[in-house]
Amino acid sequence: MKKVVLITGISSGFGKEMSKKLTLDGHAVYGTIRSKCEVYPGVKTLNVELAEPDSIYKAVDRIIEEQGRIDVLINNAGMHSGGPLEDSPIEQFRAQMDVNYFGWVHTIKAVLPHMRKQQSGLIINISSIGGITGIPFQGVYTASKFAVEGMSVALRMEVKAFGIKVVVVNPGDFKTRNVETRIVSLAENSPYAGQFAKSLEIIERDESGGKDPVILANRISKIVNKRKPRQRYVVGSPIQKLAAKLKCYLPERMFDKIIASHYGIKF
Figure: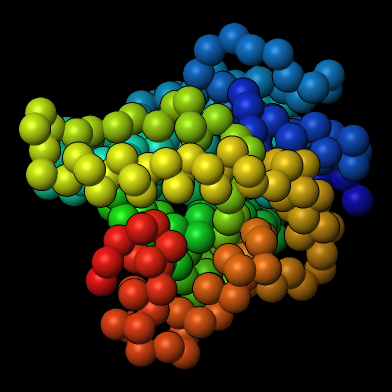
């Protein structure tokens, strides 16, 4: 059945591939962008700044005016920060949360009245492996994803009575533009400089050697078309899927040691 889909952040990476795949599936797809860019034919673009709530509500109003409903919301747009926590200015924390968390909250609040009226809807929040486990030198970014995780669990219980489903997707390493767009904070003569350089090299190696975003787009397509989707999907390498499971069973100190070791940190 044709659905009306809103995806945030479709200029590249996951968003670009999801908008293409869902359009090919026959859905009416709207995607948010910050500036003019090339999109797949048939995808309708909406100029939105997630840090500017008014632009979000105007975009949702346009979809309702044109389609009369919104069946699926995919929260995908975001920014990436890196660097030692101590070196990261508080403004960076605020900017990260404004986009990766508060921007998503405003988008959810904008669509929920329409989904409640319909007595149906699907909200997919694209979190991260970093939303399951903290990643060293990505504390600012993972904090925003942990916030999304907690919000999603609470929201799922609140909206179930209205026929609305909430799904969290945790991608592992994919070949997106993270390496190019990551905002790095590192103080002059930082005591973390040596370890940060070593860990960042591993982070960027994992991302550059990651999976094709098309894989995630195909999984999202299946979730959108499922009558009863699972509450969570971890999409990544076998090791990343195993890590997500081990987090639930291993003692916290042991699990932290495994993660630290992967990033070249003695723990």
